View: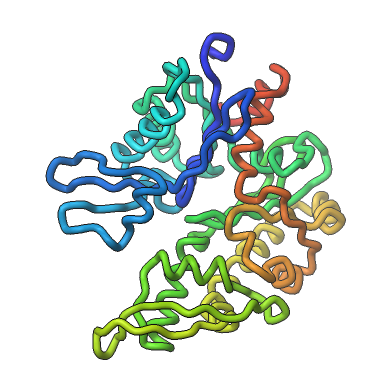
Length: 339
């Protein structure tokens, strides 16, 4: 590895957001994983926050989309160009040519999906691209002792998937995932508003409702929010008020799927680790973990104590950062898990 001669960065390449860690500086970038492209010239028009603001608002000549779906690369070329743009932004005013990159890779992906992540990173300009198992680095980023023989379970609700993993002695023992997460929460809210209130809204409005008044337990309902959209009957623009309990109703099926995924993980856990998990409970992370009432909901469904990670949206990137900043033997031990 070229650790001693190149800049070293860690990347959490998420369906919704990309987070970048620079050794010695910490997290230096958080940006939406969105790219706007001119359909005729194939030129990248905008990346990150600027591109996200274009979602649902672009003319016919420009398309704004997410190049990752369900935590895997759906558009290889656009993913590489997005990463290259992020690298160029980071390089401003400093020598940062061909960095060594540790990048999180979801546990259980196919070899083709794994190669797509690594290949896109090389094509973006990396000198070396080193994969790291996301459940392991996420646990490290949450402050867990991954080398401990005691079992623990983490639940990561990201933008594209909900991923669960039982770990012991630094390795994943059982893992499950479901294509239910932040993006599908937004879609469920959009569908509910269309079916129940006769109003069409876009992803941006649905996400705002989720963040500002979203709740998944009646004890944590948070009021109401006025929104603007288009009538399903007349096609005219109009406004309506959405209440927190309506978001809870919209997300009910999604939440039951999250709970079922956790239960399936627990059912596949070896009996020797079950008592450890009962003592420890589960560690909750990812952007979806910030939904009000989620800890209460999951405790009721699983019977386990639920702890929200200190920095739930950054656990993967912070875990990679601890590997970069840590001693060589620790780095080798963790990175060799995925080699």
